[in-house]
Image (tube, protein in one colour):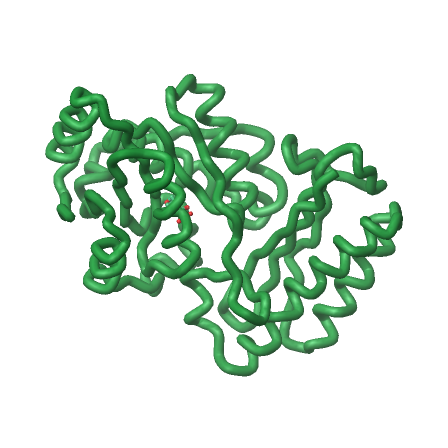
Length: 283
Ligand code: PAF
């Protein structure tokens, strides 16, 4: 496995791999890898010949009041995981290499980035799409794999790829959960024991909503108010949102109709930690 930090070196290697007829799969990450990332790497391995994992904590997707500085980082541990997973290249550039002091260009997907996460993190997706577009131009993949855990991010990236004609196939890997249901996330290390134990209510509330819809409940407000009660009962969470949206267009749903797949998503805060999770109820 090779560790590359230079953009030019990565581009030259990607050209070489492509010219030899091999298919490149990229797994973009911000590092501090866990089972969720490993599952994405395994999807990349199954669907390509040459796997690149990128590790870059992207400053442009964090607002000034967010956790960029304290975001967990451990490159040596990440490298060991990637080596064990037989990744071909880890691309881990410095911030200064990715963003020159004269950097002026941003990629912005409109409309679907101003709802849900975008309402609470208004500059977040502009940073995500900008860095992902850059990583695509640097690693030159045929396929790229993202996690369903960040459902809106996956939809936004697919839209960017379609609208800007990137010749890249986007694959979405399922959310990987702890045995008690908590969605794996690098940010889970911020949780204290009490928060960690109580955070299981998030998935429980999503499963409750799913079972209500499957049973035939169509009134979203009724389902939402039970979910809110379940979460607030734990007495440590504030809720940013609980939302029901069309799983493809992100259009808000008020009446459940299983002719369409429904994305049920939520974001909560406890202490300084913000957690997100989602589930898709399929037709
Ligand atoms: O999902 C993430 O870890 C990040 O948002 C991504 C896609 C690597 C862009 O920085």
